[in-house]
Image (cartoon, rainbow, N blue to C red; front, side):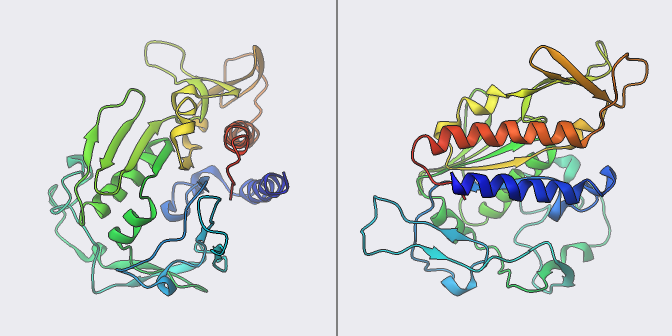
Length: 300
């Protein structure tokens, strides 16, 4: 209960800071884009062969559980703000580019679409007060052995999982798995799954259509079952949303209309963007906490 309370207070502080920013800011800075949350349910201490433990990011916390011996103590690293930093030149370049990753869509491939310069590839993010090592795919695969990592949200979340697949593909090629409700990839050597669930509101909602209402219909108190029904199979969940709430929307709490956003011509009170975003996030978080904490899993 104490961890859950602290999590709620932390989110409230974060959102109170975000409310001071114009909505356009959120998509201008992808590395610190709006509302990306990681929930580490039960990662175990591992031995690292390809990268020393000291090179791991300092915000990672690895917790042991009853399946481990009583003499094994949890490992906690000092937290650090990775969003505080700057871009610096990197002579090594990225692990992948448009010519080496088969998972990259043609529309997203700058090189094959004729971009003449390649200088944009040779930059990396350097946090101001902590060490951020180069991504090591084999170490990451060790961390997610016997785990299911689920990305839930909008196109930003989809971009995240596609980029991660390109990174991991430099070490191992995953198998595509047919699954109703998500796009899923399987790494048989590590019994690890990556998945992407399209859920731009996190909660239940009907996107606007060209042939129907010109606004979204969003039910802020109902978690989207598309991803929530598989929650028991997930070990780590990454939530990313916000952009779809900026376009015209009507918000419901149960069967009652709370108001709308950017909705001229509708006889509803315009309640803005941040209030519905907060409600949708709380519904998603509460759903995760109730499901996972109820099974004795620790939320971090």
